[in-house]
Image 1 (cartoon, rainbow, N blue to C red):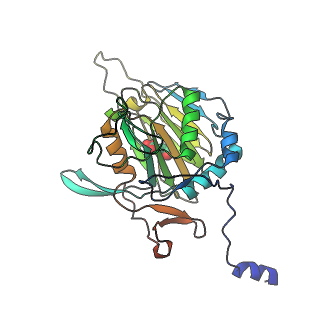
Image 2 (cartoon, rainbow, N blue to C red):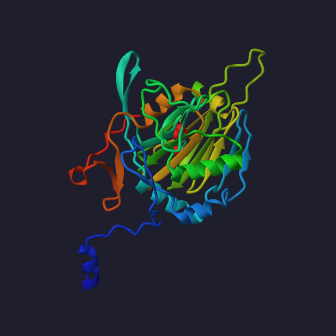
Image 3 (cartoon, rainbow, N blue to C red):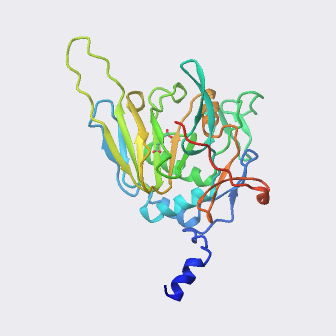
Length: 325
Ligand SMILES: O=C(O)CCC(=O)C(=O)O
């Protein structure tokens, strides 16, 4: 082996230079484990050009009402935004218990999650306080079991732009981080009653490509004896910067998933913006996306999520729990 090659082999690997220049301004709130940097100016400027491409209407199947943007966020900044958000946000690996066949069953959410926002009965003031949306007065103690968190500037900017471009209103931002192909989300629909009758959900991809699968919910046999045409399943391979807007009858009738995949799969961030109408939505989202465990933060040197601790020196590497779902 040549000398140079040996040197390279034994040299400690320096963390890759981030693809962004960090802002000095930060969003902070008593409920955040740590402050979150503002979106770098260069990204904020480029976001003004979003949607980068016109959306493709997808309504070719029964009850399907979607717009697919390839991409929505300009490709020139999508990977930088992925690195920025993975580094700057805090995430959770939520565990909870459900009853399955009457028996309590532990569920380990097979991805990292985090959430910001509050339902339409309340709103945040400039200084991060919570007031009743109608009266503007401070909310009563006990309105929520959880502590709602305001949407940080770096995610609020994309929310505002998306609202402007789609005409939809959002008050929640859920973020998923899929560390690799073993992380996933199983078939479900975002059809909870607290989202209202025909919810609109804007769902962004940053980072690695992943398959997004959709299938229609079972259709009951026709009472008139007519044969029912089964809608075709859909597979979209979502890339960095892409966005799918699911609206109308979509959530009521279709299920979606991001299945596990074998082999090399880089990290992927998914951001969804939605609107919860009533209080139950707030408690639900914080229960399943923050939970009761500690926060994780990206460690650029080790290239993995590490348990976060206020005292950095005391921070210990904690392996996320084994996946279950
Ligand atoms: O990661 C995705 O693209 C889908 C996320 C999703 O379905 C959800 O958060 O409800």
